[in-house]
Image 1: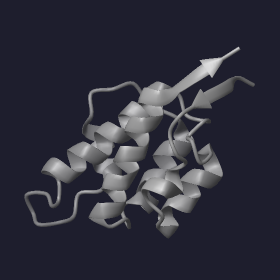
Image 2 (image 1 turned 135 degrees about the horizontal axis):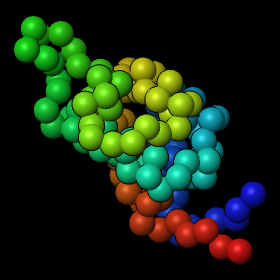
Image 3 (image 1 turned 135 degrees about the vertical axis):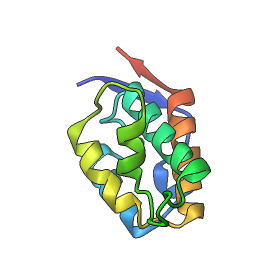
Length: 113
């Protein structure tokens, strides 16, 4: 298993809502079980959803999974996709905190030998 070094804080520092506990349980408080690609796709799904998909054209809520399905990307970790539904319960501030944590993880985490 690879070893990682990081200068950022764990996820609960940025956002601490119950739906995020599932992310921490599955992927670690530093998202160490996710690839950088998976982290970027999660970030893209959240940011796109916040920016464009509060509701669809029929007035129905647009889920993070719906947004992920619309992204032009290769599939990501199946466990991550399964977790998207629980993230729909996060408040806007929690989603933004998750985005902040993802950016910090992508930017400041390095794999070391």
